[in-house]
Image (cartoon, rainbow, N blue to C red; front, side, top):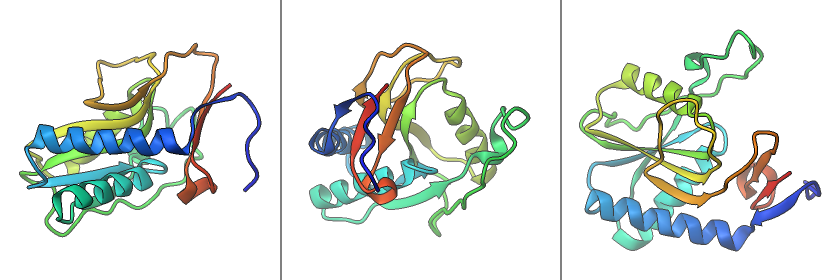
Length: 179
C-alpha cells in the first residue's frame, strides 16, 4: 500500500515496537506472570496488536499466551448514526474467559465508547476475574469514565485532529500519524 503523506509521523515502526515491548512487560508484572492471561484484540487493529503482545510475552515467559478477537459492532451505542459497520468475528479460546485476566487490546483510545461496548460484549461471553485495557495510543477526550491500564503513547490532541494508525498486518507499514 502507498505511504500516507498527510500529517506527521508521531510513532514510527521502531517506536511502536518499543512501546509494545514495554506494554508486554507491564502486563506480565501486573499479572505476576502469564498464568490465566488472555489477550483479546478489538477489531480491527487491536487484533494484530494483541498477537504482537502475546509474541513478546511468549519470548519473555517461554509460554504461549492465549489470544482472541472481540467484535463490538453490535454493542456500540452509535449504530443509529453509523449503521453501515461491517461485523467481524469474535473468537475466544476454548478455555473461555471465566476466571481469566482479560486484557482488552485496542489501537487508539479516544471517547471510551468502543471500550464500553467491549465490556458489554465480554459480559455476554462470561465472567473474567479481572479486565484490563492496553492501548497503543491514548489521545484523550474521554466521554466515559474509562482509563487504560497500559498505554504505549499518550498523545494529547485537539478534537479536530485525526490520529491514524497503520500496521504491517493491515496496512503494509507501521506508523502513527496525526493530521
